[in-house]
Length: 78
Image (tube, rainbow, N blue to C red; front, side, top):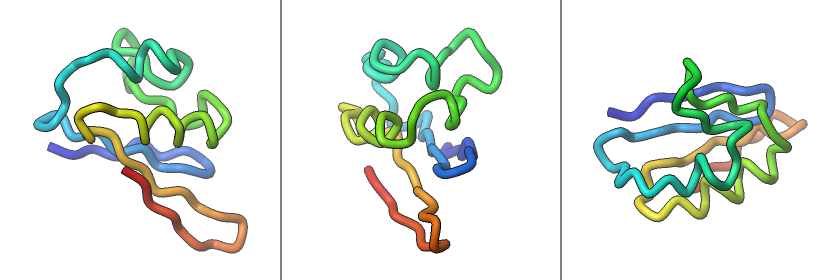
């Protein structure tokens, strides 16, 4: 099941059916990804470039994002 976590500049999506629980996200960016917090993803918890880098590095592809540009355009990433 894919769920979205919306921030000001980026929405992070998590697919629980794809996740292999490697811990890459929580180790790489704990201010955004914290399994002890609800909701466990805080999309505004770090600079958007850092969030994109960690999401792009997800080994299973369970994380993805849509970034909102200042001009209103959206950019998607793995």
